[in-house]
Image (cartoon, rainbow, N blue to C red; front, side, top):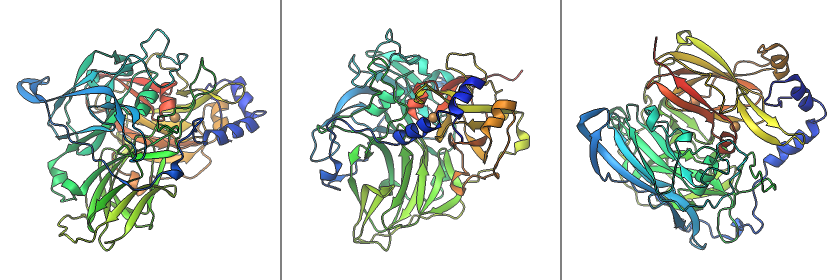
Amino acid sequence: MNKTPGLFTRRAFLQTSGMMVASLMARGAMKQREAIAANPLDLNSLARFVDPLPIPSVIAPAGTRPNPEDPKSHVPYYKIAVRELQSKIHRDLHPTRVWGYGNSSPGPTIETRRGQGVLVEWVNQLPKRHFLPIDHTIHGAEADKPDVRIVTHLHGGKVPAKSDGYPEDWYESGKSAVYFYPNQQDAALLWYHDHAMGITRLNIYAGLFGCFIVRDDFEDGLNLPRGKYEIPLTLYDRSFDSEAQLFYPTSGDPAAPWVSEVFGDAILANGKLFPFLEVEPRQYRIRVLNASNARFLHLAYSNRQPFHQIGTDLGLLSGPVALQEVTMAPAERADLVIDFSGHAGENIVLTNESRPVMQFRVIKQQTQDTSTLPAKLRPVPRLPEASAVKTRILTVGEMDDKAGMAKMMLLNNAHWSMPVTENPTLDSVEIWELLNFTDDSHPIHLHMVRFQILDRRSFEPEAYYHGGNIQYIGPVVVPAANEMGWKDTVQAHPGMVTRIIVKFEGYVGRYVWHCHILEHEDNEMMRPYEVIAPA
Ligand SMILES: [Cu+2]
């Protein structure tokens, strides 16, 4: 049994270890169920592959402003309003109410280069009322807080703390914040999204996210597919009612509507249901982001065509990894290269767990493909374990109520509001051992830093409870080849110790680490951490 409560009391442990196994199993089965509206949208009745895949526009700066780190120079300044929009998710459906950055959801793509800092003013122009169910019993979302609050975080960005989008730095409609992103980091697909305390799951579900691409000379020199042959692809599941409006499920208790995970039966690709993309019979680079609240994606092509993964969350792998399927937790990115040459005239469907997501229509016209897929991409030197000055044991747990229903989720058995316990020194290296006591995989994300996965290993949770020792019961499992790159989010699997090694480079200040299942993150599975200056 790998199911134990988040609170490390003997009583709580016994409560779940014996009598309640049956109800826990029932709950486990229930959790997998997709959220269905009272009058659900019938996906099977929809025509497939009738809308072209939208490619979010690359936003142009509104001007320049003095560089906050060097006021003698200027940097591009962007102004992006956050507003309520009507979005056509399918040709044959009414528009859907969404919230978006700029004029769309996903929002416009911000593109920049390594070392080219940018300023972004995030303007809250949302209505005063939320259209999704806020749970005021959740910490940070109490009834005295305004319904509509936003704060934007650049996921994967090495960003000064005051521009990181700290969850409590939210602001109301009518206000704005100017954030500085220095972009002193390798080329990678980052993404911006809302991070407001206690309602992130609702704000992101409403549509508040977009892509942010950092490029650099090294990557350019590899001659990977670029321009119209490089496709940003944001995938996320949603549930809709028969009027094509977003449905977000509730617990059934109007006073406490939070549910522990949300899975929708519809998967949107760049904001469309079942879109298609015309492609030439040549090599493409497809940069996938899983922007789902809770769903892990298992992506493959209908013809089982192999493809290569060339990059992870924070940049290129050391070499391409051949795959036929890729699994992506919420917030993870997979940089893929797929070769459509030899498939002219075919329709190839991208599937998630065998269900269609979108179609690639390979046109017959043959064009010269001058792009390459080098055998060596970017060196990813492994951080030696011996360089770590500290090892932290951190638990990933769940607190259940008497009926075995998840009540809240906890990291290291601590609430958000408790004092900071993780306080690494700037530029030091630490190993974080994530002990997962639950029956779910949790995508654990650290702000500001990049890290590497060391290994995973099954352990005995009861032994940890009783003696505080980690007793391993399985072999060391090294990361898959496509996990050997720089990461900002790691899948911490149930019943396992997942070890990561982190260099706390960047800035001193207060950041957060959290589970990226947004329902978990909102309900306590998030902790502050503080990078401190060397003594
Ligand atoms: Cu979680």
